Picture 1: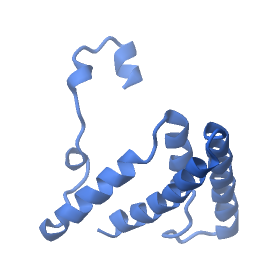
Picture 2 (picture 1 turned 90 degrees about the vertical axis):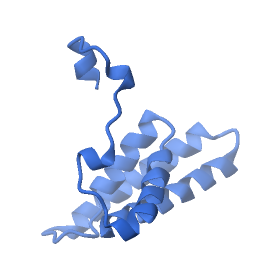
Picture 3 (picture 1 turned 180 degrees about the vertical axis):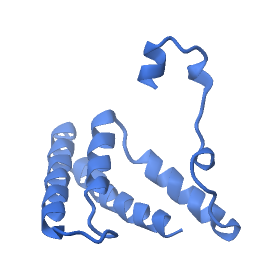
Amino acid sequence: EFKLKELKVKGLDNVHVFYNSMFPSPPEHLESQFADLLRDIGCWPTDAAEYVMMSLVLLFSPDMLDLVDRTRVEEMQLKFVTLLRKYLNRKHQACPDVSVIKFAASIDCVIRCKEIDAI
């Protein structure tokens, strides 16, 4: 989006990209569940840092891959999970309970990503 704005492409403020314009639609009988998961996953990050860190946690998930060095990927994922935890602690230092709840929700978000992948 930034690159398009940098190139002065007009009319981007009203453009929305929908999931099914880039990926196949889920089976009809799972559309409602899929939409709920997609909404929940999309609502988790509340700022750019959370979005990037969650993306890295998901990117370095060894769960569904046949890896040569699974341990290395797990270690990288753990580093990003730890970084996310530290970020949330700092962001919500005035209210540590919020940090704990947000971190737990991040784990739930990873689980929901696995569920959506299974659809």
